[in-house]
Length: 162
Image (cartoon, rainbow, N blue to C red; front, side, top):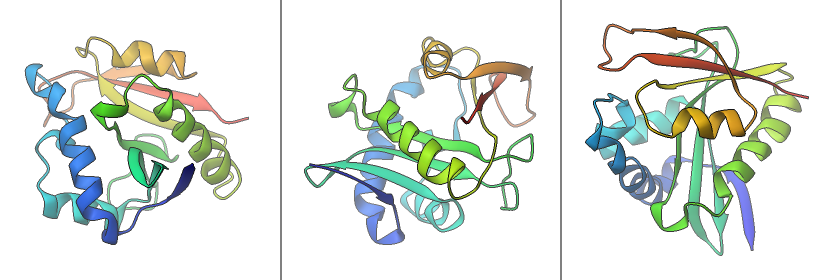
């Protein structure tokens, strides 16, 4: 059975486990995603500041996605909802859960609740497969920048919400 819902700080233990394990493969690349090194307390603060949604399968959190809001403390580059930490438990990868979760967030949250025409995200140009994954999910790259606090160049993507 699948369940889609917003996460709260009561979910910190399962969220942090998925976040920590899901981002570990990034450590081998010259990429500075804040989620890679986030402490449990930083993950708790993230949940308090950024709406984060989870997909649970048979009671287990398998994938989570956060939105950085234009009016929040860490807005994206275009005044639109911006996907922040997006992660899938390594034990559940390649089963379509990230795509399913993204679709729910796009339709239930971004389109119906926020009524936003588009969503953005950023990722590392040097990551070997994220660009292709996001393009397969319908995102289009619109810019690339070298942010001061990052080792990697950031690719910015956008996706129109229908």
